[in-house]
Image 1: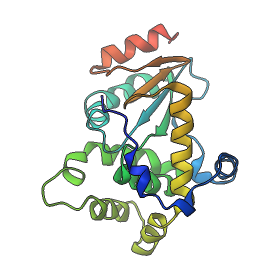
Image 2: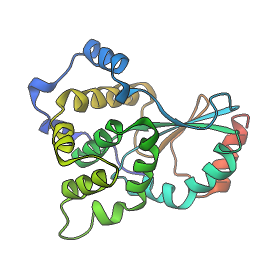
Image 3: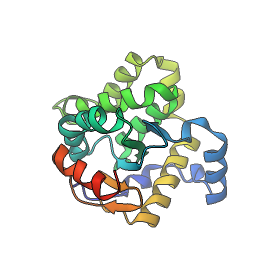
Image 4: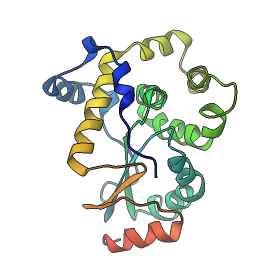
Length: 205
């Protein structure tokens, strides 16, 4: 599980910092900050996941566990899944901004694609992660001009950071991925589908 770190905040311009009230206003009025979900909201178990696009453990979960979770638990109506962006660095934050700027229905496919190819765009040798994100964004329909506007949108950047701060303070998130099964936090890695399903059952699924 990745160590929680926030040194990247120092790179955010001071003038872009928003008050809590302004962040809440942005959340209320900006569709980019509304919940991103999968499945039936009436499912017996709601699973919330906090993740970072540059977290290797999050990528491992996506590639080895999540697709089975989707097929056997989400698509069958047993689990309602809620995504929470929890970027651990500036690159993950930019990726989250792009994902949030896409049409709502494209958020999950984009996030899943980024996590499943993380080793190629985030950590490969002689690769510029920002350029790689722009290329992936282009495949999702984001023009070069739109990408520049997203990258320059400090209001969106700070709104995501403010939400992250609030979630960390509320749930004491120490690393990613971090899960909630209904109201029960789970702060260890879930390495197999069976382990994930066991938590769903404990939560009433």
